[in-house]
Image (cartoon, rainbow, N blue to C red; front, side, top):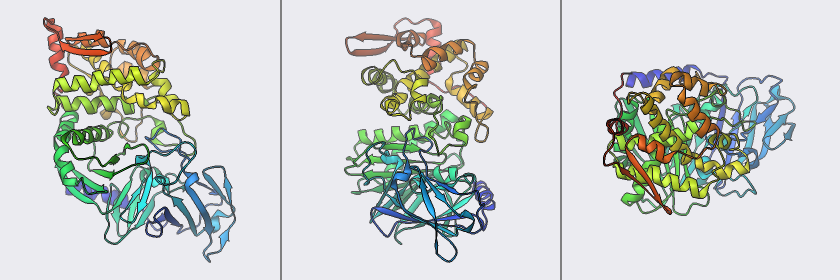
Length: 508
């Protein structure tokens, strides 16, 4: 494993040289503001006039307009004299003579304590700075020159000397290295008075960094609760498709905003309420981690070209949001059942019955998953977005059952996902327009009808019909829903129920 890590580090280091833009983020001058400077070692092209701050970021599915938090933007030449800069819209600065720029400086207000009129930034996608910590989602304070999104860069964080820093980025001296702006945004940084723990899942090192405002949570305690989930994930995937992974936990006593988690390719970051660490709450935290950890498959390995080269200028939705979030939610739940972490009874209650109730009582059932994806960035879509984790997960579960039925128990959604990982993967995106057609070709013609009815359209979900396929009774009495095993299932129903509850043998 050490050789793999060393190779990965060397490969990244080779991309970096004296010409890399060097970002310095100072978290020590003010407890509400990050001071950012960018050193430009070589002359920029005369056409590199526009400096862009993100309008959104991958995996947030929300308009953020980070330019709202930027002030005092200055471009300086080698002698420290200002070069004329004009603000161009919400997120762009137009620099009159980019070829003479040696340094860019500006201030970035933390998103946690900076009020905005609309489109508030979710806390897990935001930034915070206090005397004992700094939470840095890099897109909230870093921009790039248009045309240089793919260029390597370096990041230096100035924090308090006693702080510990956690991130998936590799470090060379005082700089963290990113092979592109996308890579930087894909790599949050947590620094401060943190606890730390690590383990190995097969050959993959897993690292946990935790900030706990009142000291109720530690990385060691979190790791102990997560070990069964991590092992269940390994069994589900056969082999983890990453060579390292970092969990960043940030617990606040009284968070003022939307809390949750945000996935990244080699890490995930959590802003959560610092409740008492009871068994029930620790289970909730672990369930969230299971979802985020599974994102190493979608969208890390399986995603369309819209995600592969992200549009930070204009929010651009992908119709396959259901694949990225709905399938991930289903997988993160069922792998715990198949891995023996939760019982069938708990799985049926929490991952099917509860999701049915929330889908039916809190969201507009006329919205298809495709429409939800396509409108996720507008305000109406934002109100329906949460249903991707409920309706989206239910649809994934029924697709699994349909695949098992059509293959006579030989191939479910889990097996198709692993085939997709092998076929596509990072650097080889699925087609935004043709993926559904490709998926039908990979599976069965009947899957085309399923996609049409339950993803592209908003046909009522077939709870009773599909659960009966695997020998489960679905009954509804008033507002109460029950799912129970059939007393006299057919041989096929018995076989499918047994197969449904386990990971099929697979050689990869």
